[in-house]
Image (cartoon, rainbow, N blue to C red):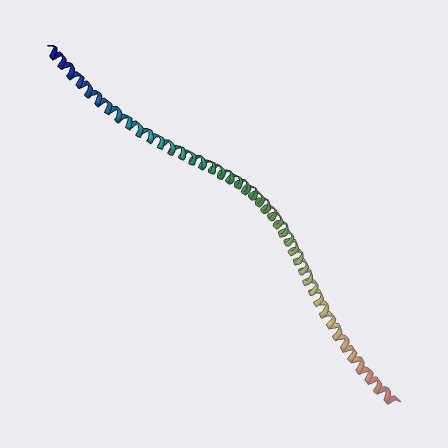
Length: 158
């Protein structure tokens, strides 16, 4: 009976030794898996940190780009305002010039009408003067003929 008890204990120790070996292998496997997981975690952490730095750099670059665009936008707004002012000034200047041209055209039309009237008057005066010159020429011719006749008649009286 002692022998059976001893044999059972030896078998139990052998089984425990085998279980211990299996457990040690499992612990070693888990240790290897933990090391692998720690390496993967370290790799992921480094990758994350690298990506984090890249994202931060991109964010800074985008912030700079936004700032530059906002500055450019402000400059464009000022330029647009300046152009609006210039357009308004040019429209006002154009209106003044238009009114000036209209006044000038009106003055020229009045002057032209005045000149036409003056020409018409002068044409009438010219016709009247031509008629008077013709009448005077006829009188001069008549006087010359009369003078010639008087000379002839005076020449015969002597």
